[in-house]
Image (cartoon, rainbow, N blue to C red; front, side, top):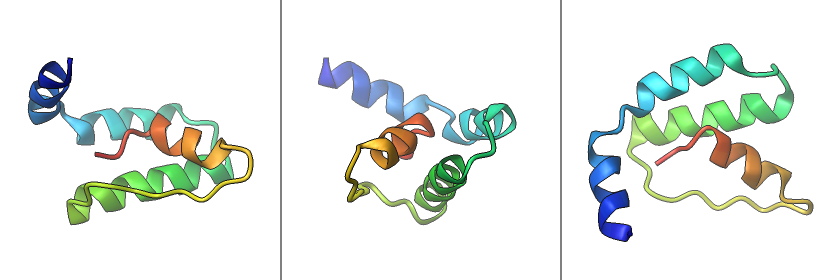
Length: 68
């Protein structure tokens, strides 16, 4: 399973996915944070993000925009 995920991540167009999600979002503060983190990850080639959260909402929102 991990081999398949690694292969897909090599060819997946995150920029295209993120641009589509940006137009389909609810325009909430949580979405703005998630989009910013995803764009930062793409720009700076960040491989891990740690989200400190009380309810899990921030981590859920970050995963919606799938930073790599």
